[in-house]
Image (tube, rainbow, N blue to C red):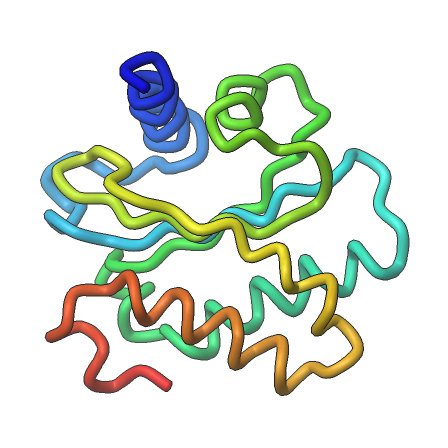
Length: 146
């Protein structure tokens, strides 16, 4: 368990160092990070899931994104540079991970693997993603959310 917690910490540090260019002073104490993990070459369904994931997060949480309380990242899980993230979140195929971060540490995360079941229904897909992001946000940040 200790090893897994360290893996999550290293994975989150990799996000902060390689994906985000934010200054430490600009990062809120608590935030949510959504990461769509995909293969290097994507099929049309995987492209749709990635696009829907990004759109659901960016349209549902525009204010929180601007305030850096929510972030979205595309992550190629086959790229060697992302191996730590892939191992930390046990990624084996395309999926969306939503992680709660407090004090620069991942405190919890969810694998939203039901995106596969909802990809043919954009509204249901958006609801599923947005509800999961919303549940990880601190209460005061969710008042204007879907």
